Image 1 (cartoon, rainbow, N blue to C red):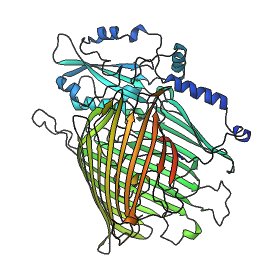
Image 2: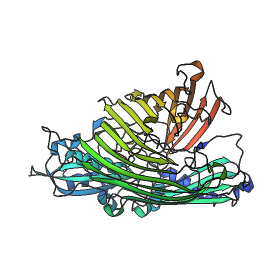
Image 3: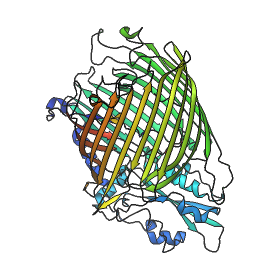
Image 4: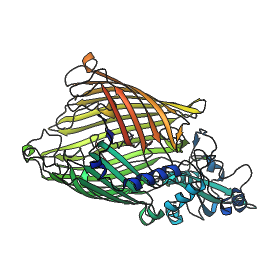
Length: 633
């Protein structure tokens, strides 16, 4: 299983000063922007609108004949922070095989706060929020259903659809409720309940008084599942001083479950491919294996990228390069029509996929033109095939990585075999790799993740750039302390690289070893890391933002080639503490402030580090499969 992805913007404050008048001049409509942002944050703290009789629970009970013991909102709107651990399919098992007569929809407004439904603010703010936010259209929710009227109810399929809706960027939470029909035993109605996030948001990311980034985005434009994002960078050292990026995304194009993205940027900084500011254009179409019954998955990514000398560097220093990326993959799933195993459905699946990738530099910096030792500027072409055997189901719970929203924790297994061919510069080599993943969830809410990876390239009859890695992750059950919750996490990892030739050696940077530790000259071929983290999910609330203090202790060992791992000079440690802030009703990602202490460091790395990550994306991964890749992708 892949590690969770983290897309961060780190800010290291070094003598921060108030903005000068010169900087303020470049801030676009500051009073309006700040006032609007404050208003949007206030809306999300949970409020009460003037009640509409059509939304009253009593009317809905009468309409759908909901019994007193099963109020369809009881599991959705909670007056307290209860923690539950339940299999996703359990609420539907009793109705297995019954015909779905009708599917109806209910959209919850912002007056219903999933985290705390008792909170109230002025109705003026509520009404203002309604005017600013476009609710998801009924057609959008309907297009994201893969359960149909007139078909037998499949408990797993309904649970998968509920989870899929919940994982859409513009939906905070979802439930699908079954309503038995009076005087009939073979049919049921379904009620699909959804609750949007407030889809308009923005961020302000300062690096210094003369350099800052502003981002504004609408995640559900016109309620049609469209994302529009505008980012501008103001930097006094740039020429021109202002650069921008524009991104458009459409979720589930025409009900095909294909997502499309078009992106243009003048302020790119992709360190995987080069070190300079980049101007880029890209187009992406993807269709994930969004449930085990899906047959086809795949994707296309095309991009054109060029370094842009906006900082007026001399020609002898500026690294001028131009590269294109092409990435195509397609996969097919087998096994969705397997027979039942006793009273339970056989959920084991097989997935085969093929991928073609090309990274081509039409221009590279002169000093790297005939060198292979650089980490960048390498032409690469690969063709990979993959077969996966997997089964994955889900528990629903809370307070894993989120701040109270429903989270889907997978359990099951995945066995992957990958093989193919790669050409990097003039070196051509076959590749083979395997991965074993296992996730176990206990009924008390604790869960374990085991991942083993083995991979190697081959050349001249020998193994090259071989890698073996083992990772164990444990999330504890929730511990209650008064009205707060505590969850602990343990991570244990070991990796060994053999006969390293062309690929990057191992490091202990950030998530690979020590958080926030980013040396550029510390490499090795054997690594061990151990991490312990404890997070306290409190009831502290600042205009809707929940606060969670966190502490972490880490140990990492990294040995250079041909030396033993367990030596005092190979040991690095860190202790850090801080807090995370998030409003689950907003599209903003988690904000984390952390101070770290490194007893032993290397050149140019301070013993004490302070960072604020303003776009900290942490979400438990729920993908079934992904495109074929090597261990170095």
